[in-house]
Structure formats: C-alpha cells, structure tokens
Image (cartoon, each protein chain N blue to C red):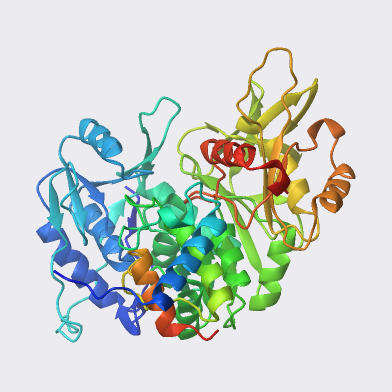
Length: 455
Length: 94
C-alpha cells in the first residue's frame, strides 16, 4: 500500500497557515484536524462550504482522516445542491457561515482550541497517512444538460499534481512560500494552488480571501517572503488599474482564462516578479504552465500527454484520472509544448470563413489602448442574412475609427464587428467569462439607444 | 421608525453614485431606479462580486480613496446604495 501524508511539513513548528497576523504551526494544524474529524456528522459525504481557507483545509483533511469524501460543486445554487443530495444522499454541509437557506442538513464548524492552548508538544508528531488510491473528493462540472457531472479525485493523484506544480513553480520547501489567494478554496484552481500546494509543498497559505485591491496589497505586504499571489486575469487587471502602491511578491500565479501578454508584462513590472499561468480544468487538474510575458508556449506537466482523437485534443497520463477531451483548440508544437488557439465552443463560421471567438478576442486585446474586450456572435434571424459579430471594448483613449483600423490589420474583414460598442467595463461573470446572455443584453441596450448617442 | 430626511448633498451624491454604477456596469436600469436601501448585491440589483470590484475601481478613481474590507464582510459596504454613499462620504478625498 502506498500511503501519503496529509501534510509534507516535517517540522512540527513549520507554519501551515496565517490567520491574519497569527501563524498556525503544523502541530496545531494536526490537533485541529483531529478535533474536527471527531466532530464531523455521520454521513459519508461532506459539502465543504467554509469560506475561511483555514477551516476549509481542516474540513478537507478531517474528512480524509474520518474516511469521508468531500464534494466540490461548481456552484451553490439551490438546484445544484438538490442534485448533489440525489448524487450522495448522506451529504452534510460543513459551514462557517449562514446555513439557513441550504436544502441539505448542515453542521456548523466545530469550535477550535484557543490559539495559545496546549497542543501536547511532548507528543510524537504523527502525520496521518492516506492511501494514495482512496477516493477523497468528487469535483463537479456544470455539464451540458444542466446536471452536474461528477469527476473522481484520489488522494495520490491530487498529491502528484500539486507536487509537480510546486516543482514547476520553483517552490522550495527550505524557504517556505506564503500563498495569498483571491480565488475560493472550493474552486479546483484555488483548491490545488492555495490549499493543497501549501499542504504538499511545505508552504503556508493565508486563510483569508482578500477582495478589494487595497486588501490584496495589505495581505501581501504582511505575508512573509517569498509571497505568492494566486489570482486570475480579472483580479490582476483590477488590482493594477486601481493604481495603488503594490508590495513586492516573489511570484504571481494566474489561471481560469488566458492572460493577455500586455497584462502579464504590466503585472510582472508592477510586482517585480515572474507571472506564471496554469492551464487546467476541473476534470484534468493542472495540465501545463507558461510564462506569458516571455512565451505563448505552454509546457505540459510531467507525465501528461496530448492525443488527437475524434477531431479533439485529449489530455491523459500523469495525474489525470482518465483521458479527458479538452474544450480548447490546441496546436501541438512538440511532445511537451502547445499553443492555445481558442475554445471549441467558440468556433464560428461567417460567410464560409472559420475562426474562433477566442482567437478574435486575443486580436482585439492585443491592440494598444484596449483594456478589455470581447467578440460576440449574436443570436439572430438566419433567413439568408449573414450574421455579423458584435464586439464590446474598453478602450478609453481610442475612438471607433482608429480601433477599427487597427482591427482591420489583424482580422479578416468578415469578422470585423458591427456594432463595435465602447463600454466602461465588460460584464464578466465570476470566472471572468463573458456570458452570451450578458452580450445579448448589451446589444439590446445599444439598439434601444438613440442613434446619435451610440459610439 | 423614522428617518431624518436626506439633505440635498446626500441626494446629489446618491444620484451621482447611482449613475456611476449604471455606467460602470452598463446596466439597463436607470440611475433613479436604484433604491437607496435596496440591496445592490444578490437579490436586489443583482450585482455579483465581479461587479462590486468594477464599481470599487470606478469609485476609487472618482473619489480618491481605495475601498477596504479589512478581512471583514467584503460586501458590507455594498449592502445598499445608501451604505455605499455613506462610506464614500466618510472617506472621499476628492
């Protein structure tokens, strides 16, 4: 049997988490895990809804120690939770907040011992071991039919993934990093790159989730070096646009959507640190990394391979539980490297010419002066008319004419947007995507405006 | 329960901030449809955390200060237009 420890820290006094300015050391963490494990409800599944990253980590580890499986849904809508209850009827919600509205039985987070409580320093430092093959979590994607699709995660594969991540990011357990996340621990990216990366990389995570740019700056400033900011393109952009003084960081991490090269360079300059991007998905875990300020090429994680089947690119091997078709158009450069060419779902065909919205968006975002932007294929009547793309753009220093001229240099005339709508901000959703419904609403609003007021 | 009637300055700020929100988010709602005490987040105006960050950015530019949650409830300031305006009035530098 191959069993792996719940934390890789060897020193009982190593810091695992920061709760504000207070460190939580490994010995205390294990004592807290044991306390929470003993207080978990009887069911076999836990929906870990804790917003505090430290309590989330305790809930996950206590669940493993107590032989339970964690559920990580992609949303917490009542509909999703009801579907989860059908998937695993013995599910209990572990929550550190308001639980009144949840359609599942819930248990409040157990009280923890006081910070200065005796943790039994004289006892042996016994880190619980979990069988590598054990199913420890189900993560869910939204699925195309509205029913969440479950994906299994075994402990060994999760550990392999984040140990490879620690190596790819250059984290050194001898100089433990402090991970500050703007992403929630329940999201696969946040789960891997804040909680598991700290637990398995000998590092520490900040228990909060700083929200406003000034909060992020404050949290980073108080975090012991080397500090790592785990974030998204959207959060990085608002952080840079706020124009506040930013503390140094050792490393910036971004995922969820491709980061435009210009934003990557701004971020690297502002923080004086490299910015690495992670490409992955809920199904696969992490697949590749790159440094977008230097190269558009992604490098695969060790052991992971790409294969072309049925016109799609599949990821398999390494820590991937089972082969998964990727939703992106991928151009393989060699066995270990690839380029992203947009999303499959975004493929469009206008007047017989094919491209992807993702590629068009990259062209738009690459124009100097464009802060944010996106193309949209409108829902429209198809009676022999060619549907034109719309584009929404945030570019305070540009006018429509110069922007169109710049686009024309990059994009086939078939794809030039009509209309091109200037906005103060794009209606991106919580994952930074531009939902179709929001585009349609913007188009409708634009059409309703008096013509002389349109951009 | 009674409330002191809003001063003209309050009313002007409410109007201005409502317009900032509508413009920043390109809402189809008009500024005067945003009620002072209705929740901005979730059920009321339906803003989410991404919207809140967008508005926070515009507010910081317009009023010259950065919003902070100090690890408390991120969204307390955005409970309503009134709470946001109170916060702006107390912290603005321009």
